[in-house]
Amino acid sequence: GAGVSQSPSNKVTEKGKDVELRCDPISGHTALYWYRQSLGQGLEFLIYFQGNSAPDKSGLPSDRFSAERTGGSVSTLTIQRTQQEDSAVYLCASSPRSYRWGATDNIQYFGAGTRLSVL
Amino acid sequence: AQSVSQHNHHVILSEAASLELGCNYSYGGTVNLFWYVQYPGQHLQLLLKYFSGDPLVKGIKGFEAEFIKSKFSFNLRKPSVQWSDTAEYFCAVNAFYDFGSSNTGKLIFGQGTTLQVKP
Image 1 (tube, each protein chain N blue to C red):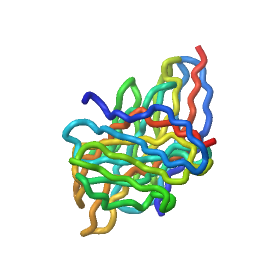
Image 2 (spheres, helix red, strand yellow):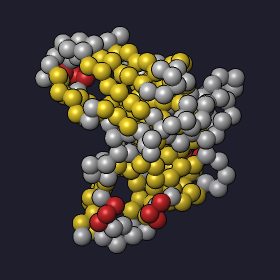
Image 3 (cartoon, rainbow over the protein chains, first blue to last red):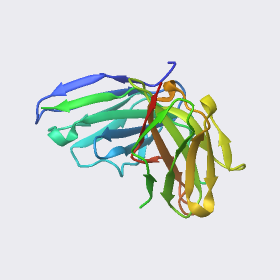
Image 4 (cartoon, rainbow over the protein chains, first blue to last red):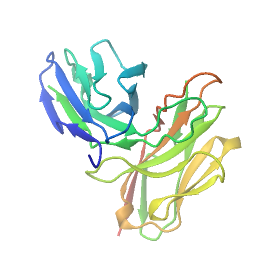
């Protein structure tokens, strides 16, 4: 597609429910990232995919958070047993390059985000 | 851990005033540096980037930034702001780790600066 697409744009859920957030990256982009934007915490990295594997999951805040990517394209971020502190805007970004030592080009293109509200 | 600090959280300017937003990072190795902008109701967009070479980089809409390695800084400037520059501005760093390890490309963001330009 023309840009990174995320769905839903807004999600309201009750505490304790599971939610799934979807990201459709720019066609051909091999790298995919999830970030979280919340009041007081700013923009935080969550997880990085290269193809279908996730070599860096260091930003996932707890084991309630998981993500997968299939076909080197669409990614789903799942939050189990949601808590009020999970309320935030979840952003997805994609990039055309794989990252190795010495690589210098890593422009990330962001989607509009999913605003998650946990009541 | 790497961190990025933006000194100004909220800036209010009149049209035609000059702008400088500060950004400092804490990492002694090789970095890629970015400024992203988020206009009201829109997604994050790349304003400009520094990978290597000339430390003075020019971006879209008349913005520029200067990388000063000795000061670990990447300040954003614009000689004359317009009302349409009202937005939130984020500085971001991608740090290259030790030789032999992969660079995931993940971005560490500053807290953001809200710029309000009065007509």
